[in-house]
Amino acid sequence: MSVREDHWKEGGVFFCSFTCYKWLPLFERADMYDWIHDWFRRLHAEHNRLIGYVIMPNHLHMLLLVPEGTSVNKLLAEGKRFMAYAIRKRLEAGGHEDLLAVMAEGVRNGDAARGQKYRAFETSSDIKECWSETFLHQKLEYMHANPVSGKWSLAEDPALYPYSSAAFYERNAEPMVPLLHVSEL
Image 1 (cartoon, rainbow, N blue to C red):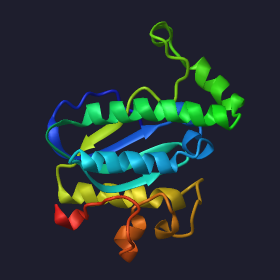
Image 2: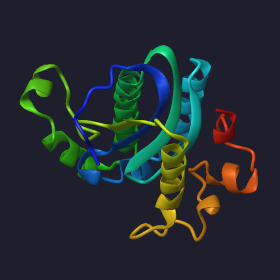
Image 3: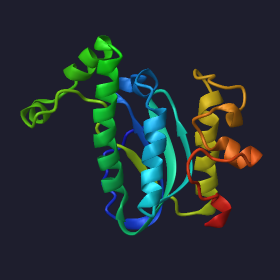
């Protein structure tokens, strides 16, 4: 999933994904769902618009409308940096020494020299600009199907998975975070 590519274009609609280090279930084990929802609210306060999302135990997908003058790379980098601190603190508080040990092994020499002690995420994020309505809908359906597909089986129906915007789209449910409906683009 991870692709090392810089997206310096400012403004637009982007499908963004990032993964926890070694696909560890860090979001689940550190119970990061509330923190991520708060991050989505901060993005909204900074004039970004979340169109859809799903938070999985070890990765996240989102569709984000970024205003002109804003770098999607910078938004994700800053979010992941602060999220990594929160993950570490929550894992330490929960006594998850097993996960912290794996995360410590992942720190590269250059990062360790700059003081990094744990690696929470895979190096790069997958960021794709949404050029067409078809592509946008495809990504929205893909992310909403994630919790019910393959190995996950986290819910019987996408709209029943609580860490997703699927219920907003499928059942007109009140969203947990501010969302811009895809039809409003």
